[in-house]
Amino acid sequence: MTSTPRKAALITGAGRNIGRAATVALAQDGFDVVINGSANRPAAEAVAAEARGFGVRALVAMGDVGSRDECLRIAAEALAAFGTIDVLVNNAALRPEKPFLEIGPEDWARVMTVDLEAAVWLSQAVLPGMIGQGWGRIVNFTGMNAMQGYSGRAPVSVAKHGAWGLTKALAKEFAAKGITVNAISPGPIAADDDQPGVKTDRHGYVVKVPSGRMGTPAEVAAVVRMLVGEGGAYVNGQMLQVNGGAQT
Image (cartoon, rainbow, N blue to C red; front, top):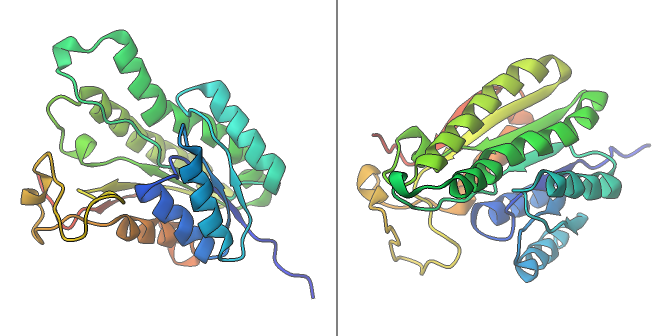
């Protein structure tokens, strides 16, 4: 009997928080994983070791996704290691704060490249393989900064709205090829290094959440898991808000 080849997933910004949780969740489901980080290689290696504990292969592919050349190199490393990338999770993001009237061209461009354009270049790199096999999953991230707006984060709001537009466009273009493209909009999510039981909520987001608490990276990862699994096969072109019911 021939065994079914294992699928592979590339997760950007995978060294901590939501990216780490998504990587571990996919490894638990049997995906080989490519862990991308921009600077903290020890953190990425730790996630890789954790993933390997579930019996899967893990590749660390460091690089700045704010550069198209780096995106293509990261994708090439991933494809060389695993043949195809079946799942792409575009999680890496910057969320700088700066008054709108003080934002310069470099400030604006940096957020656009990391928060939006990286998803474009990486999707272009892995889609041919997905098309060739008739199956693929892309998960992008938006967020409360985009959906509700936030003073001092204009470029983040614009880039994340762009990620939502990209999601809808790709979902329609590639659905007939067996590929789904969806977005997740997290609410206030606690970081890995937040102390248990302590609400680290510098922006006061929790007051918008009916449950009165921050979410966890694992709760966001569970939605990634659903979208790329068999249960998410008929979910396409959607934005799932994982925010405890927070409203504007």
